[in-house]
Image (cartoon, rainbow, N blue to C red):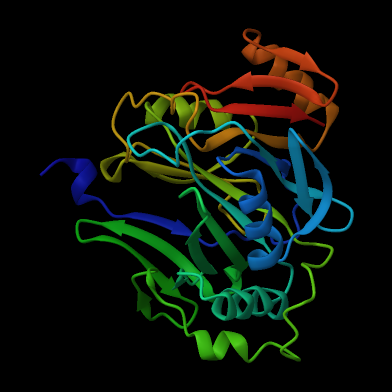
Length: 304
């Protein structure tokens, strides 16, 4: 048994709940097979607002902010075995808003996997093309620490009890946060992209790449083929990377449903200049910011 495998990795809860985070997310761009079908999923099933609709692009989100942008052109659904998007996460601002999306999904008859991570409450589901979506309610106040040992990962609650962090969510309890049962209301202001989880081909290279943006080490667990990075606030899970699709996994080929890019807004222009100066290569300036790729060729639109 190696030293790495015999030494538990303990990740404490973040102690700075009001700290400004190093970055926030803008729109995640998805390539889909059927623009109308995917638009209906995001508006009717999830509750996003249709912000603009054109033949080559549909923007969805809150009344004032785009969270997901759809692009047509994919010929087949999401393909396993590649680097790219594992899931994007929609974070509603309150327990009631989370419960309203949960009730929408139940009434729509959509297949879901409600999961209690302790640091968050999550609903996992697939979009019409098989792209994984997570609806997340941040609850870091419920977690004391996250532990990896030889038996695998587990979470310690604030009261000292243990959880796998992957137990079924108490759906009935979650729905009690709803003040009413109106599922016609769209997602409110404050709903945002709260994290992205990426498949990568080189764990070390991807982790170092995102650390260069200022993301802090939350979990580094190469023996479990994954790493997690926080932005400096109470919810220590903003960008996660894993090699679960294989070492050296290539990007999904053109014509498959996939992520085209995700958007990161860094907290200061100084941080943006530092990142651009550090990377120096394969950067394209656009009207919306700077396009660049991580070591696994996942595309980021970067701005401040």
